[in-house]
Image (tube, rainbow, N blue to C red):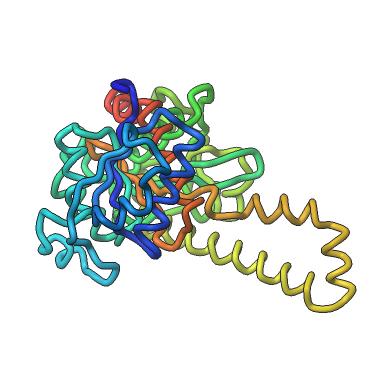
Length: 333
């Protein structure tokens, strides 16, 4: 059991917690017996949900009745003290009791409490919020998605190294192509920070990735680029646009296929293909944003996901630790 990956879990964050969190742990355990879950939250409620579903060799419950609310500002969350389930979970990874921490709670609070507890990796100025996006050929890592509204060229170069390190920790047999999100593919396009970043990366002897230049928003899903780098403002707009577009397509397709008899017949005839299409756009499969740049990894599960999505984010935790993300960043930075 000593070689297990130890995951600190904030069981009280997000909609439907702690049930969806514990159900996610149970599902994850069915597929992976190499994780140990250190669970923080209401012990009585958690024990009722997990008892006899998983051997107690695979989990430990740390009792606390204090939680960070979804409506809390980051400052309010920090003021709630050091006994909330989120704070205690992060503190456990700080003290090396666990390898990684995950929460479906308040994003702003998670970022602030993480920064209060965890040191930055040496030579990195700002952490970044990253996530996995589907593309035509597989998956891409995109960062920053909102942690830093304004960035310098140094920050974007750091994000490039962190993003490529994340990609290779998840996909160890691949060398990622990296590009900067911009309004055009020509060298002269973009603001001064982006152009300066381009020049530095273009002249740099890259280690562990291939720098391919700029990428435009309409090319994000093509699959030719594995790591997409931007400031947090641009990245967050791109993220919300992609989420909204996916929701629009699926809702319009559903309305078309169920709006009349012909549509219903067509949906029955194409049931298998439609099921594949729906699965490809299922956000639960890509759940788990990663806050990187700190000396311990922090994973943010979407607050509105269900237990399947939470289980998938636990799988991301396992792969990050197994892939030695932090060591890769330290080596490459």
